[in-house]
Amino acid sequence: DGDILVAPVLHESGNISLLLPNTTKSWFSLNSSSLYTPGTTVSVVNASLPTSFLAFVPAGTIIVFAPPAQSTDDLLKQISNSSSPAALQVQIYDGANATFTLFEDDGISTAYIDDTDFRTVIFDYNCLQRTLHLSVNSTNISTDFPLYQTFIVELFEYASSSSPSSTNTKKKSVITKGPFPILDGTTVAF
Image 1: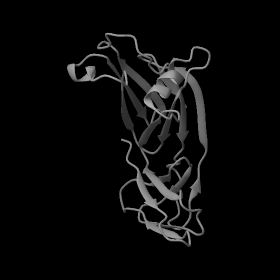
Image 2: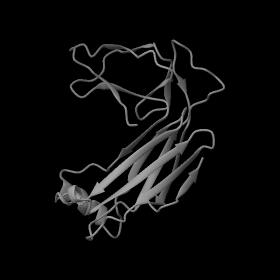
Image 3: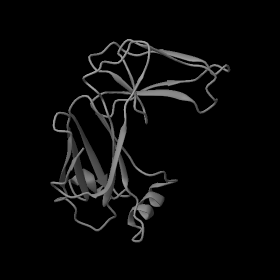
Image 4: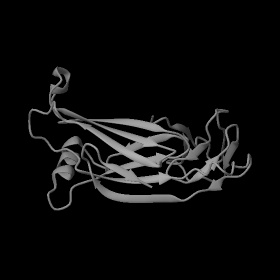
């Protein structure tokens, strides 16, 4: 998972049109509950330059975001802040089952090559049950290094009972829950 379709705005006018791939899954606008039918042309007029772009993810996608940081050292400081540790942001785009594996190492060494000093967190979303389940493998950690302790989850809903129009987006709700501990067996229900 984590597929992202990106179309940068390259023309001075700020206008862009993008034909979404004609796949079996609908497309969400990234960070949004706007849902598009496969094969739809999406157009934006007067997008601000130079940082504008269109980004889409297929239904059934999980994307995990770390907080903004200037460097790995800065990120490690945010994670290990005892009064307010940084949380992961987990975005789930509904419509199909999805799995995402997060790999955490110390951010400094190459110890992960020897199968030491890392942890994996598997985020497993069940679309029908509307649950997110975590499986954590931290057996290979041999030193103390900061690990994410909490996560906040956003579910971008997909309404399977009403299919999106081929020319318009359908706005669905976004459910935000958390923070939750990153512990083996944690399950979040929506």
